[in-house]
Image (cartoon, rainbow, N blue to C red; front, top):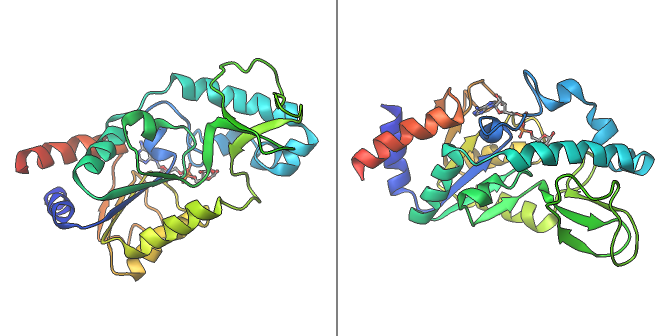
Length: 244
Ligand code: APR
């Protein structure tokens, strides 16, 4: 029984890494990027999620982020977000997320590496000013820096931009050192995040994937739970609570 195997693996593991993508927040009402109804089915990333797009039309880019902030502001963490936060209380566990929605923190996770930034953080394009801005809707579009009146932008990683160095280095190091790597809700098509489970595999970690669709990892994972995140969390907790 694969869930029992996973519970036992978690119990005996010394350090766990969990990697999440948009799929874990899908059942919280936040669209994913690829696949049916994905954001990239409706919008062109090159027009909305690149430094050039922002340079060309900051108002359009901010209108799109304003729309995403409105959706995310209504979203609540689901049982899978909460499960990861619960596991962090029991085990040495680091969460690496590609998501910018902040739902993991809301669910109680604390040891989080946000590889792609956070939609609630904005930064100045001219000076070093940064702030948490939760205005929904934004008071002005595009918002201006209160210090230098430069344009503020979302503190997220756009296509063509490097990931934050420290976060990426930590993520790669932890992926190479962990003994259990659990991937939930990511297509693994975007690099360098997509390589992390393979770094874990190469370093002989036990790799587990949760996704209703197959990905490039599924055949190589030691355990592949072909199901949605919330169903996985419910079924895992039944077995985990029975055993512990
Ligand atoms: N539970 C678990 N997984 C799900 C669910 C669900 N309920 N619904 C969808 N999925 C899976 C899909 O099968 C898919 O494999 O989640 C994955 C979502 O893939 P993407 O939409 O590509 O999202 P993600 O992998 O997070 O994208 C990575 O791409 O556009 C950039 O910066 C953006 O961080 C994002 C990055």
